[in-house]
Amino acid sequence: MSHDRQVHNSSEAPEAIGPYSHAVSSQGLLFCSGQIPLDPQSGELVGDDAASQAVRCLENLEAVCRSAGARLADAVRCTIYMTDLGDFAEVNEAYAGFFAEDPPSRVTVGVAALPRGAQVEIEAIVAVDG
Image 1 (tube, rainbow, N blue to C red):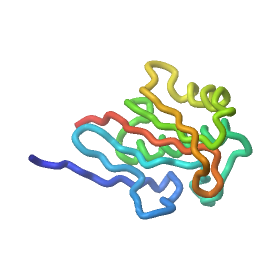
Image 2: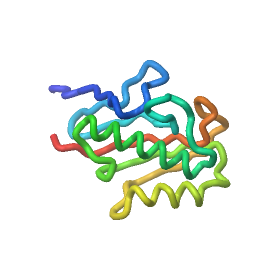
Image 3: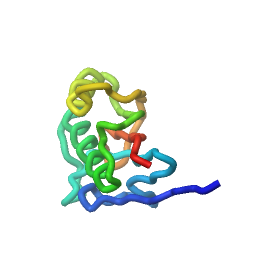
């Protein structure tokens, strides 16, 4: 069996803050590492609230997808990690702006903390052309 595993890193997304790739594609799927709301140029945390942080996370994921020749709109599954589920409605509204039609399956998980003090982290699995 052939494994068509390919690593993808985007110059338009923040550098990884650990030993991982932005994404790995294999057999028609792109597995995107979680993105926290870091500015791609400065590497600094951005957004004062969970909704604006979610937007930055999704913009970073869009950049990662582009670098792999994919589109975030083709996500089949997203996972959102939040430090305060009380912000769920606001994050939901921000998220909906990225998936106007046929949104992917999704899970949202409450966590105690995220890297760099972020309030939100989002990861995605995206369908790509084989």
